[in-house]
Image 1 (cartoon, rainbow, N blue to C red):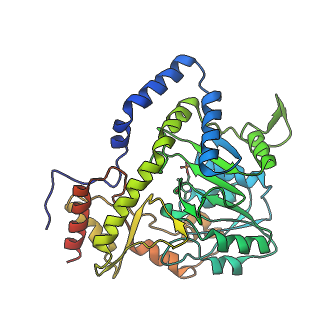
Image 2 (cartoon, protein in one colour; image 1 turned 30 degrees about the vertical axis):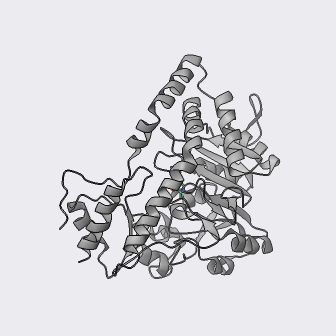
Image 3 (cartoon, rainbow, N blue to C red; image 1 turned 135 degrees about the vertical axis):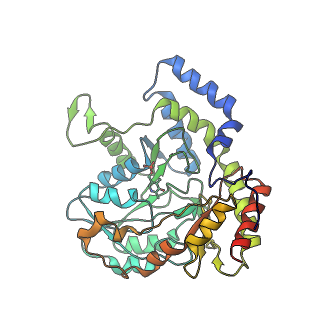
Length: 375
Ligand SMILES: *Cc1c(COP(=O)(O)O)cnc(C)c1O
């Protein structure tokens, strides 16, 4: 057993990143506080422009969270009662929750065993006359094969809403995620690749009409002041978060490269280890490793996780249960065994410590502890 009780490795570490930019962030936050301008204003508009430029789109609308971004995207394309939206059961609940929230029906299809992303053949077979949209999730930072997905979507006139919550900065065939489908939805929850010091989200698109609609919907459905034509919500990114995100966006590529370096090293030392499968990247894409998620075979995932914890290596399980079998979706009538690849993934996945500042010493501890625990 590798014993290193006094140096445990966290699954993620947000404080270390903050410490590295503390002076810049504190100055910017204090400036916002002194300005008296806390909602909207030039910092939010500036961040929207910067994220649009970074993503390679013409329009960006900031909002309160990734969940709101997805909700607003569906609403902007008038998706609601009577419509079906295809998505993955192996994602965070928000992806599906918003489909239900707008009154539409989530249709879950199985995932690809190697990428954990939507199985595109199954997307094609799940399309019905009621299908209006598909929400691909670039899970763990790995982009979906957008070339293949777009050709399916175009043939059936589907709206493609990219869930980029875990993949800010990733690209497929040289294009940044969030610029490939009709609309991209981002989360700035603190553990995402671009994380705020609180909640935040944004929506990207090249469609100015959709962007204008989003701006109305996110402000109570108000087109002209105190005049409401449709039901909206209140969803704002505040100026403090915008100021912090402007700073962090400048470091994002560096941090994503550091994540890539960690992933490459994990791969190098864990790829050949028996009893586990390491994540593989599709050749057409470049992921950003929000998570480095291995599979542990032979029903050993939970015991390996406990052993690792005893060695001081903290891991996470994303996700322990597939969405189609959640009690909240009982009414949809899915049965166990219906989406077997996603269900098996939930039994086997283990996300290793992954953050840009993870040192080589910490990586070694993860690698050697894991090898040790696997016997
Ligand atoms: C985090 C996340 C969301 C929701 O983002 P919030 O900002 O927490 O609302 C949506 N989809 C996926 C895949 C996520 O990981």
